[in-house]
Length: 253
Image (cartoon, rainbow, N blue to C red; front, side):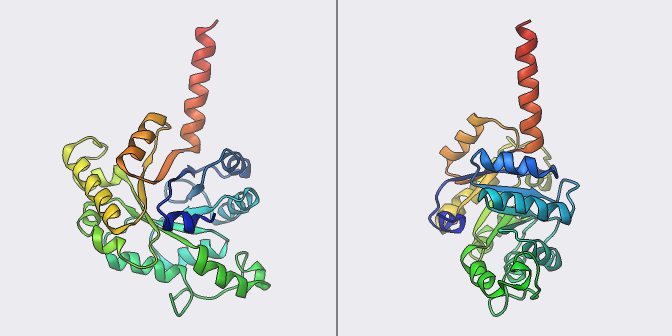
């Protein structure tokens, strides 16, 4: 089943983040069984040419590639979609107008306003018609809810046609409330709960990024009702596994 169909059914999906530019990383993580993988251009040094190579690697594994953008700019959205991304994760969506702008940038007229070009996504010009049809049935747009302004406008944001899912950025959200990194602060937890409740009420799948690879925390978020969850990222998974194995090795010497 395609990711867009899973999201429409509010099925549980679990993905992760890629910040390293080597295609082997993407292939290993896709083969591990993640439902989707985010190529993070906001908090990494990934260049567009590297992003396309990573998309190609994920395509080879049948894993949807979602590009986390640096901004909600139509030119950036157009370029990563032309590179063959399954969809985009758009930061700092604060209003319904922000959400509508992202949708407009992903889709061609008459649904959207994306400029038409011929690149990898369109089979380098040989499959434009097929791509246009694919886009309507498969493109994914994820709104990042990471500011208190977004929480206050959450119903209108999640009601925008074309927004397939949301994901909470807990660190930026806490920062916008004057409590950077204090994720357990009561008002921050209340804001997260407001988003979760709105998603349930509106039938919109969503979740939160469990940055540290902690299975227990992931399970708690699933039990809370989130169903679109990011689990770890390449550098944190690599770091925690290396440290854990070396600790076990040294303790056994």
